[in-house]
Amino acid sequence: MTHANQPTDEEWYALYRKAAEFYGLKPWQWLDDRHLFGVWDEETRTTGYCSVMGALGEVYALGVYLGSRGYWGLQNLRRTAHDWAAQNDAYSHQYALLASFEARTDLSGEEITLIHRLGLRFRGRHAWPSFRFHEPGYMPTPLTASQVRFLTRALRETISLAIAYRHQTAELMPQNGRLLVRKPGNDGREWETVWDVEPSPPAPLDDPIIVDEGLLHVAAKLPLIPAVWEADIFYLPMAIGVPPERLVVPRAFLLLDHESGMILEAVLDEEHFFERVWHTLIQTMRKIGGRPHSIWVRQNHVAHSLYGLTRPLGIELLQLSALPLMTEARRGLVESLRGPQSGG
Image (cartoon, rainbow, N blue to C red; front, top):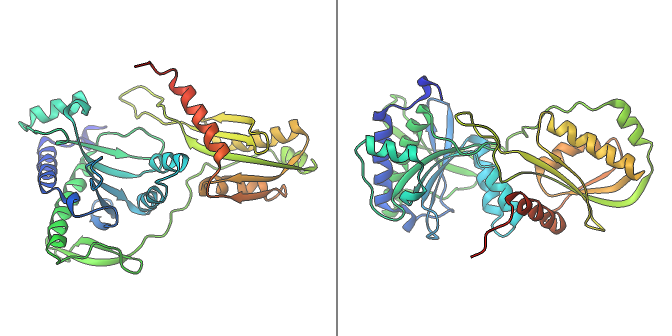
């Protein structure tokens, strides 16, 4: 983080004080994940969609989901509560600022040092504020100065709206595809309430794919065979890099045969990842001697990434709600990466 992006102690202090006020209010006692509202950020010209967590007594936090990308990431998270693979994918695709309340032992050394420098003290098992920026493909990172300022405003507006809702003077449920959004008024000082339409889903952020036309031509000449493959692309539970650079969370591509459950290929993340995925698919077809009749996927972005290959090759591309065999293969890969667990 450059010096210009580094929050001042005054900005940190304001954020911690507002977070303490939020925690003292405990709005999760009457708000849950059905309540969703927006706060406008004048600096980035973006709406942050706010969700209060804590009704289940597990995680106490305010999530501010940034723009269309953050909003739809939150919607996916809400729809995947009972599916291991889908839940992991949804968490990996969060684009948000998070103010959470942790045990002191869960905070980093840098956070403890900052709290002491600011002269602040917190008491309680889940009373210590922690602030992080979540972005797909990266480990959570500390906030920049503009993010600190926005999260402070979001906490302020959330406190105000939560009190109003408790006294039945505000409606925080989405209404007919519209959500309550707090924005500064024309004078830039007084804030006002508007009802904005739900944001449109964002376009996929995939790498440009350049594939050898000769390989496509060779694959197109292979016979269609009565085989079904399952394919998935997902983030791995590991980080690559050396601080102070941002730590990258790598992706993986898995391809398996539906009938046998055998893993056909695996590709780990590196430069030109999606290009390598296409090449791997074509090379697998050549090795087996045919094009599969169908490829099954579960996630929208995987279907989007593969459609440009399956369509010209005449391969059916089906998107299903669950792929149990793929889920088990992913579990196995994750467990192998985590290594043996020590016994108790």
